[in-house]
Image 1 (cartoon, helix red, strand yellow):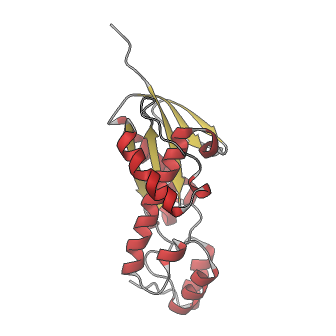
Image 2: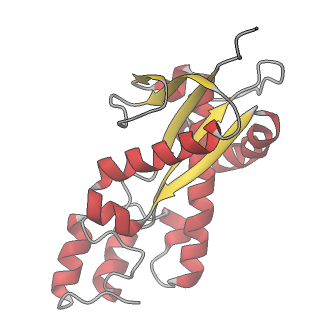
Length: 202
């Protein structure tokens, strides 16, 4: 009997630093027969370029999956463990599509209990195309979610800053107080809550 083909999966996240919204992870298995030009760290690409590459990745990859850890999970677990949770969920989604022999994860640490051999690669989104592809899918998916949150929670500017701690976001947080999309375990949000007598806008 022939041995099953084992694939390499790239994994990356988006949204560890923001004060609001979920943390998002993607896992991607690229198809060598259908290369995608221009893959690199999503942060090094313009929004327009990311938006152009994302559908190519979804169309040409052998397998891909995007997963999240919610604001509640971030506040309960902490952002590091919530990021690992989102990564594990993304890997589980890919495993349902193909067999994996190795997982390449951007960064310097690995989630626990991965289903096969794995390596953490610092700045892997710059050197490993599968990680680059995962970075782009995670970033574009999370950005789209932040647009939805902007329509739901007006006044914070989520569509512009995507939940990151900009001056405009800090001003809105002081003026309006936190909403349920904010991570109350993050210090700026916690301080804004305390200033508002621990109230969170529904």
